[in-house]
Length: 227
Image 1 (cartoon, rainbow, N blue to C red):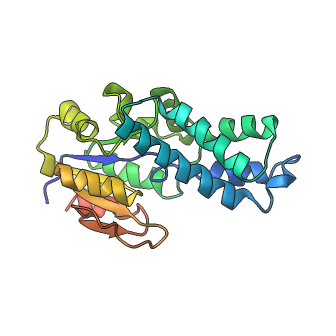
Image 2: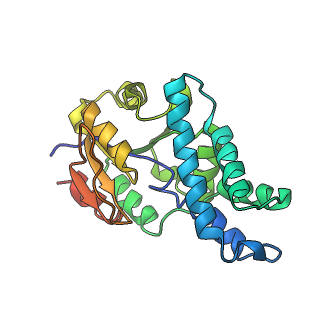
């Protein structure tokens, strides 16, 4: 297949969304998270996505940083974690999530081969800037695109259209990569070539379109894009 650009979702795809709770649980003074952090992380992420979808349906957009805070507040309350210092620490860590281990080498292969890579994310520009800087991958990306340009969250087609506006290539020359099955399905429905990074081994979502490739991590993306 001819690919002109590789587009990556950010949170859960390039950046490990469980890292904030996991790292906080290992810090002195956060012993309350020792047993709870996986549950907190899962609930935080699930509510974050749920709020993005509901806001898109309701036409009540706010930026993803506010959604992230609202989701954390719900998750903490669900576990009886009333701790403002912990909340602040979790949010601070979320601003600088670590990338998955294979990300730098994978992006370097794409760059060295002359194939541009970019982010398309629900994240607000400030959040994405912090994460990219913290992960040290800024020089490996051609651009970082945020839904704030259109004021609605994925999988609205206007979000995927930002890629075409920026890179000017046909839809079927875009390889879109996401760890979210619904996002990969949305991009496939839009007309992108798609790869779903299914780290958890989950079933494929029953939606009008399905991802073309299902991968366990990001390491083989250059093999798909460059052949």
